[in-house]
Structure formats: structure tokens, C-alpha cells
Image 1 (cartoon, one colour):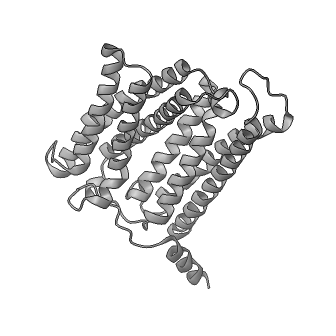
Image 2 (tube, rainbow, N blue to C red):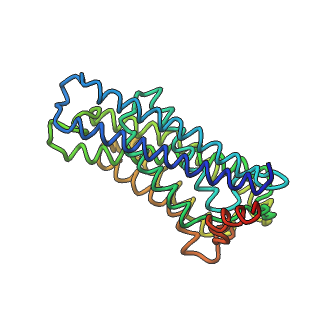
Image 3 (cartoon, one colour):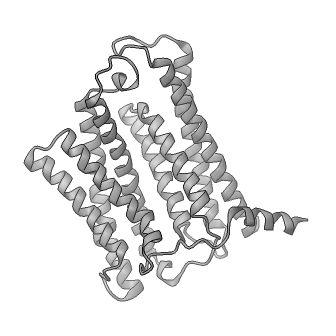
Length: 312
């Protein structure tokens, strides 16, 4: 396959992954609709509801596989082949993949498939935003990005991003359930508040050392290699450190001040807000960041039209 064909294949695989996530979201919400009048203590015997629950998990799992294909083929769409994070479209593609991957892992190890509706909705929204607002053509990596330290830095950062995002969804569900007095429906059937709080903490406890490794170790090493300085007061560096401080405060407060429940959940939501603002927002609000590689250069439609014209 040519580079142009790999690029188009990556776009098509991204669309296919988004479609699979969308159908997973529909399956989950149809399941929720069937459960709206079922009490938490009642066993689910309706076969249709059970099928919808399994279908959501299967579709989201297949979506993650196709999502991985989109990410890999994006890196193959350049000669020589490169890592698939040369711009914010590719960063977002990588970050959302790890959200899906960590959800699948959590579903297997903690039987938390009930997170599916919100994870699927997030993935659909994020991929649509990336496709419509962040799309960029496949270009050679800038010299600053052409480093093995970048690979280590970005992989650790997106893994932590996936864990923090899942943890934030759990925190949001904790807050919603703590305010709900209904005895039927989705919130009533979720695990107890202590379980939600504990699982959210585990996600953050996993993500924090990985984020520390990305922000305070590999990031400065890469910055020194790329720009000759370990710290440049770049907006993304500053916001990454702010995110680190928020999550450090979250874990410290839980360990020493006994913060549990709502206080910890709100702090986790503040942390994820700083995380995603740094991940995407800086590129729109800052013109001085050395990390800004996201200025749109060509639309998806133009790429597809160009491929069609070349084959005509």
C-alpha cells in the first residue's frame, strides 16, 4: 500500500471505530431503558436485556481493535514510518484508544462493564471532535518530535490519561449516585458508593506514578534533548505540572486528611479538567507553546477527494 492509501485507510478505520463505539453506546442505552423500572435487588431475567449488555461490551471491544488499526496505519502513512503522534489529531487518536483499552481491562478484572454507557459516549464524542476539529495531514515529524524519548513520554502520558479519564467517570457516577434517591434504574443498580470510590481511587493511584514518569522524568529529558533545557515555562509544561499537583493533592488528601467520597470526587474532576485542557485546549488558546503541532492543514474531505482524483 502507498502512503496515501495507508492515510485513507486510517481515516476509514477511525470512522469504523467511531461507528462501533456509537452502536455500543446505543446498545448500552437500550439496556438502561429496559432497566429503568427494575429495582436494584431484582435479578435480571429478561434475555433481551442480557443480550444488549453483552452486545455493548463486544462492540466496544471490537471498536478498540479497529481503533488500534487506525492508530498503527496512521504511523505507516509516512515514509519512513513514524510514531503516530505528529499532531493533535494523532495525539487524540492515541489518548482515546488507551481510554478504550483501560475500560476493557477494568471490565475484565473488576467486572465494571456498567461503565460502558459513559465510556462509549466519551469515545464517540472525542473521536468526532478529533475528526472534525483537529484533523491534519500526515507530515514528517518536526525535529523536536523525532526522539525515542518522545515515544516513552507520550506512551506513558496517554496511559495515564486513560486511567485518569476512567477515574473521573467513576467520580462523576459517585456524585450522581450519592444524590439519587431512586430505587430503580441505572444508578440504583450500580455498585455501592464505597465500591465506586475505591475503584476511582485505584484508577488514580495507577495513573499518578505513570503521569509522574511522563511529566517529571521523560518530559524534561526530551525537552533538554529537543530545546537544550529541562524546563522552558512552556504552557503545556506548566499545565502538565498543574495537573500533577492536583492529582498529588488528591492522593495526599485521601492518605492524610481522610478525604473520601464527594470531596475526593470533585477534586478528581478538577484534575481531569486540567488534564484535557492541557491535552487539547492549550493548542487553541496559546500561540507560544513549543508543543503546538495542531494547526489544521487539510481536511478529511480533501484527503479523500485527492485520493479519488488520483485514481480517476
